[in-house]
Length: 222
Image (cartoon, rainbow, N blue to C red; front, top):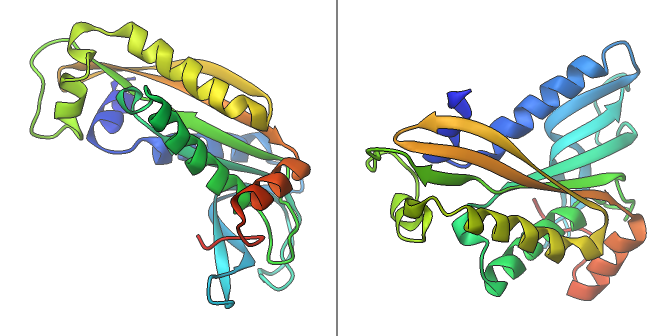
């Protein structure tokens, strides 16, 4: 249990969470015609200079499809993108706008070079929150001084709640949102919880509206 706390404190934690989700989906989908890809690059998109480049997706559920070919990619049955932002960096209006832009950039990239939307799309925003429990191992904790001097020294549950509610409200116009929390355990003198906001499924017309709003091409480089 404390492994998650250690991972969240020493680096970004979205990859370990994504990997566990992917493996659980892999187990659940055994015996079906579906497979799960991590950092999947099975489709092409158009880069800034007009060349064709591979699109990397955090997690994709795809139909089993003979030999691999990006020219004839397998049908995609679901996409999930993962982001992690510490609660101390999800407090202000500016913070929430930055998170919104990160999420919408991930959503926009879930399109093929032909403009097809790889739906359904989900976005998972993890909000790791560390509270001091004892002597802190400052020499190995990522962003330790920001953690210590933004209220988390004082067991600031209100900071965690504000981050979750703020991110959920900012993303809600894009689709349904759900919230929850994982207890990551204790490590390096801190107790870590991982609140999360799950957005989705996101509809194709929402993706089209985002592309038009930001005046971006149909797809952007990975």
